[in-house]
Image 1 (cartoon, rainbow, N blue to C red):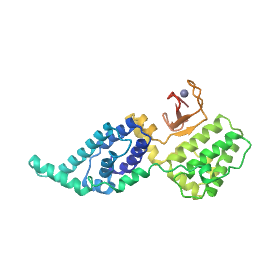
Image 2: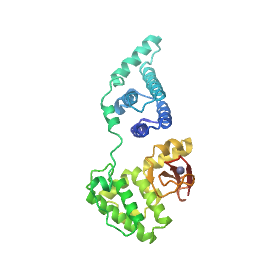
Image 3: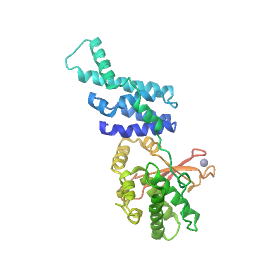
Image 4: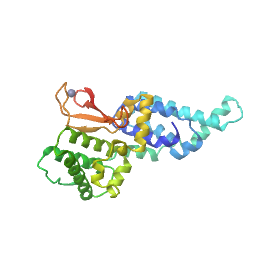
Length: 297
Ligand SMILES: [Zn+2]
């Protein structure tokens, strides 16, 4: 874990905390603790302030409070060690580390707390944006268009009229490719949704016309994956923290799957490359109603 990963860790923690997923927050905090803090990295990322402020979040359990305190204390110790080259008496070392952390603003809240409260980004949907989807005569197609719209519009300031134009062209291209709303069509839409959410480069490319909707519709999974995501998948594979990744991966909710246990159609899913890059991704589904989990390729 190095400093460049810290902003993304903040996002993941905020999201997990917002979703009240204690286990995930704890797991992520555990990884943060491995980060070797330096005065510069703390100053530039303000991660210390962020972790300190986590304790005030309404979803912060006692366990989260304790662990986040541990993390901050560990970083204080890191700084203390880096700042004291010459061996000193314990008292001096502690004093130095406290002074350093105060200087970093670890004990002074504010800015990041506001950021924490703001997260997660409000979801934009065709309904919230007052957009009418051009009826295709097939409810599956219309639903897919709506889902794709949400992914591209949320977090963007682009006008809804522009987003829907792009998305309708994307959906039309996927449909043209498959000529029916069959399993292949659905799988393709799921892949596009999943990757739109995680790949800012693709999202920006679509919105700025650098990537045409037709091109996007047929992009390979490798092309669709963000650089961050590729690194993340690789790391997940290595560290076997798939649970943490999946839970923080902004799972898409869909009624495309039916739970084999309770029959509900309210499910969340995410996709991950579990085998080699040229094989299809594995889809992991969780039933929102009963918690049943299954996967398929
Ligand atoms: Zn179920």
